[in-house]
Length: 104
Image (cartoon, rainbow, N blue to C red; front, side):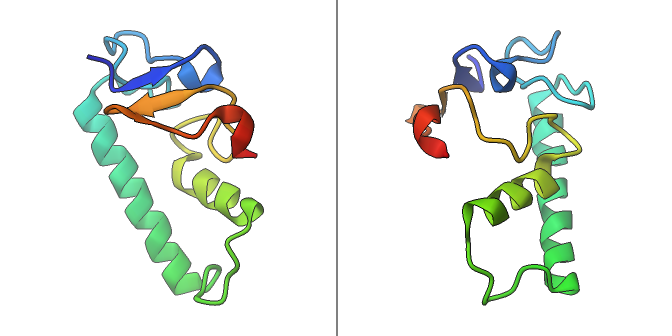
């Protein structure tokens, strides 16, 4: 079973050799379990940085630009499309993400 269900496009490409379970990534990771760890570690690191450097505070307005920056900071070392608006439809575990044309 695929981890993600996607339409075609750069965010919908799978890592070769991953059995269509891991999205194409800059690290060449093919294992779903390994990707879960890498993404979680990246999220932990960026959250700690935000808390210590003060770049995100309780007063930070959550604008589209900030959310895109946070996404890029979190996943930019893993996926080339991180921080960009999605261009493909996606779902995960039966949950449909908002249609790509509505995200921006």
